Length: 179
Image (cartoon, rainbow, N blue to C red):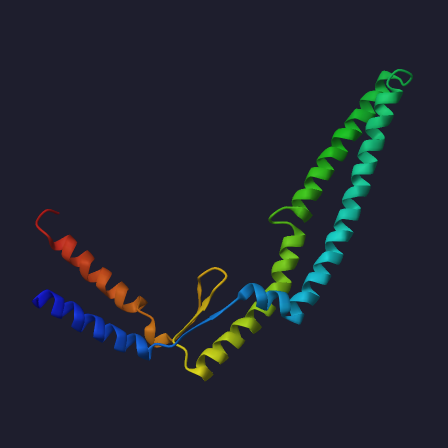
């Protein structure tokens, strides 16, 4: 009976504390799809991607043309000429691979351009979320798309307390007789 009473009191106290906590949510995907600045960024990125794809296709066409010339001309061309053409072909292949890394890979120029264009947009979105959170009195705002907290009232930040507790635990562990 006493344990049931304790749970009931705990439940009531918890409900009171939750009643004071104001929680909101956003759909970041919807924000990104409907915010005009993001649309403009995507248009700019698409132009850059098409430009890079065009350059890539030209490099591939040059490579394929040389490869075809080697295949069809290897019978009538001198051995030295074929060797030179094969060397050129390997050089073009390395150039294409380097182009892919430099421009289309995960650390390429297209990715860097996206980061560069997206950073100020995300700063504005974060500012808007913080402003709404503060003005409307929210303690937390979650992103429903990925479950992350996008805004939290500083008063709810327990980081310093956790670090302090970790120090205490570390001191206790180091002072125990087993060490």
